[in-house]
Length: 93
Image 1 (cartoon, rainbow, N blue to C red):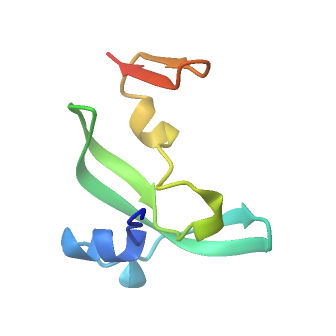
Image 2 (tube, rainbow, N blue to C red; image 1 turned 90 degrees about the vertical axis):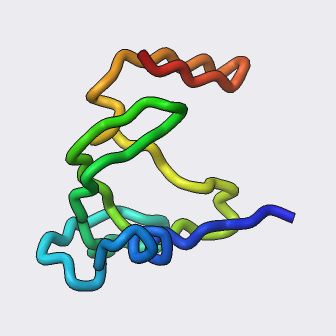
């Protein structure tokens, strides 16, 4: 069984309060345009690589999407990356 994390709960457990964020962004979903909070995370670590002051949109993805989360350009822009779709590989320098 796959365990899914709710982005709101994760943000709150890290000490952020997305519900009180003054910044909101419009995102396009299958059901239309929705407003979601935008928070600035002090530090984000992925595959052992850290980036500071990363903007994150807090939005729940449908369980049927089979996605645990999205890694956006606000993090990726800090690094050189290689994405190998054929083998399912992400390398971050």
